[in-house]
Length: 345
Image: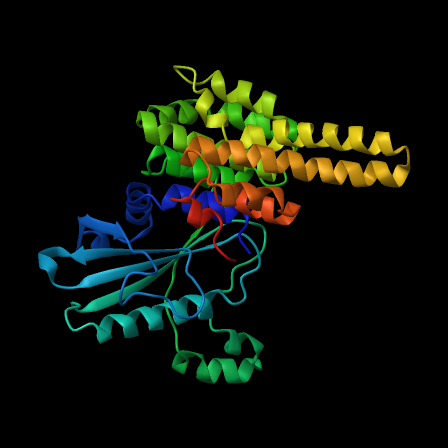
């Protein structure tokens, strides 16, 4: 199940420039020096020869070694909660990627690197699951002989805000890591205080370039409103005051989702329920109105991003459940087409 954390990470670090800056920061220098960073690119799961047949990694990138001596595939796995299956999951991805690469006659010698970006209070256990369930004496005897993958783990929970701010990442990457580390569970005053602390960073994200700056601010604002109860208007004002020029576009997705759509749907539901004159009717009317408001808001967002909607999409929106509307809305930030928004789970 996709979470707001997953969506925000994919939106930010799916950008090869953001991912490259992060990987250079967490890899040992001797390994950084062996790679031709100009060749780093994101690898789609559907690309011939690289499909992950079991499960789906958060992100897969490819980069060539210097002098084209070999190819490195990098799996980025994200965890925000307990991760007892982490090691075995990434190991499975690595095995499938290597098997697929070896079936391709033109594929160069290929290595796989498993990386993890993690935040949250739960502890990581990046070791084989079978070993953790076994008696201690068997673990001591047999652990070294089990299939094992050494993971590069970036544990944001163990880093201070100051450490993350000093990293040599691009501004949007630093902002994403700070947000994932800090915002979940914050009350509105704490969230607004974080925005004040991050003012210079927000300005730097906006200045990255006109298009990407707005996209990354939109993703951040969307994430803020999904993981905190901060009023969208308060959050907008707190962000805007740090930007050199007005950037109202960063509100286009999140503000409509949380304020306009919710308020409009609730108002419609109350009107319909009151007309029925019964408490049960009010509850049903509120639910119907909330769905109608969400559908109307999602339709406007889709039109703004992809242009006029086909009639079949309009029909699908009108017949959708609240769960379907929430799922489709979560995909807007990183979907490249209408088909990706409405893809099957």
